[in-house]
Length: 108
Picture 1 (cartoon, rainbow, N blue to C red):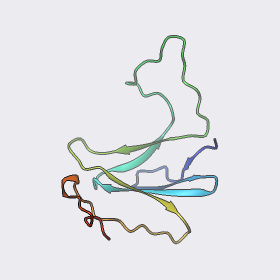
Picture 2: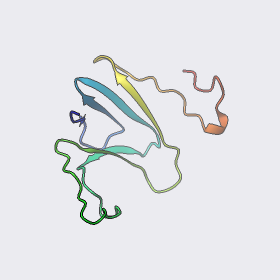
Picture 3: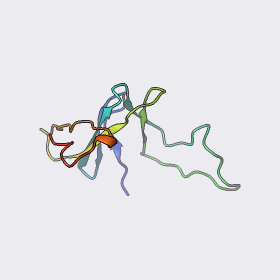
Picture 4: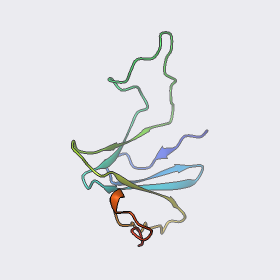
């Protein structure tokens, strides 16, 4: 499988992922203080150890997409949308808590 490239390497609330010439835009709708970052695809210091004799495979040309949010209790909402052309602009639906969902609560 070809590598998926993250077009934005800085802290941001949106980014485009591209593979085989097709793009997907991801936006953080909530929390307002949340942001994406990319990092190297390596084991984190606190990850559990691998079984004896096992090792991680090298992931050349890939990066890990992470979402950083402040400590605390938050509603996390992200929008995933294909990018059909260069004039793409997302229309964000309202952020509605699960206990308030109805058949019409997400109309734009």
